Length: 429
Ligand code: PMP
Image 1 (tube, rainbow, N blue to C red):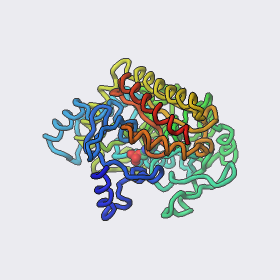
Image 2: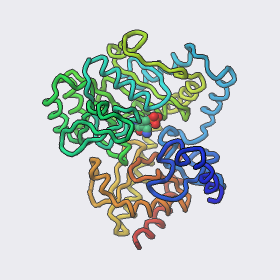
Image 3: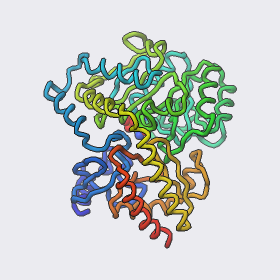
Image 4: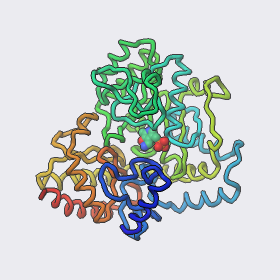
């Protein structure tokens, strides 16, 4: 860790907290984050030359594994023709056609540069389309850091939004209603209270920002029904779940058709890309077809589009998502069996190639309150043991883990052996 420690100390001078995105700083688990030099297949390599089996995958994009040779070559080829034109290109048309084929609810789509831009723009569009101000989100769901979305509920079932961060005027947050995930009754009550005011529901159809919490039976259908009844727009934030829990995303896995979908992560193959899209009738309200303004100097960047296309063309391979799901189930159930065998209470959730480990005796974690009540001391102990032994997990207990196509059965078994050793140590505490 010597080099990482030196780099982290140096980083403090000109970068707030030493990082360009907060969770990378290891505040939740303590210690120094390994500075990464390169990545390949299932592995990360830090500045001190240590190898890790990686279950973070750049927070989701690398579903094919790191340094995929086809994506790498596509990026090199595109870069040879220039890095940015600020004018339309064929690659943008091709990727729009392909995304629309893989996620048929996205009849039209617009490319952006991050998940945050995708959700922010989708919300603006939903408000512009419905001419309503309020939005409804769920406690523990993260949709990027736009003002209206960085809001959590106060106490009580139905509260006006309270900003989660200084710098967001209370007036901006007051239009955001926050409900309990997987609790459809609270959503119905909100619509009964504000039948003509709620522009949209935005939801992670599998929550991946309060560890991993899949929807309970009927929850997503309930959201669809209530939006239909009150004329609100249903937005699936599939930034994490898109091309991750299934080829067609969570909407394909659970068979629910949203009005708008937000994408990010996998769609860029590792480059900074996001997208939002959906029903033609709604999307035509976006400029220049319609009056809702949205734009981007680097949107649809040719190098980023080449990476995205190379990624999407590979995830189409038949059988890929079944293999990913099987590997993820073996990993998550394997860790749970080991932990429980050692007397450590643990439950696990998984959907496609997303998983979550909960140090808790709650049999099935379905909401934020249960997720935050887990034993963080045990998690942190487990976390550092795994890291020391060459397994890189997300450095906070509220993050989902990811399995890639490069996590072979041997790598999964190796991870389980390491987990057994580390959990035996956790059990002794
Ligand atoms: N939505 C979801 C569901 C996410 O998980 C994230 C990022 N983790 C975002 C939106 C924001 O994406 P970005 O970090 O690319 O802005």
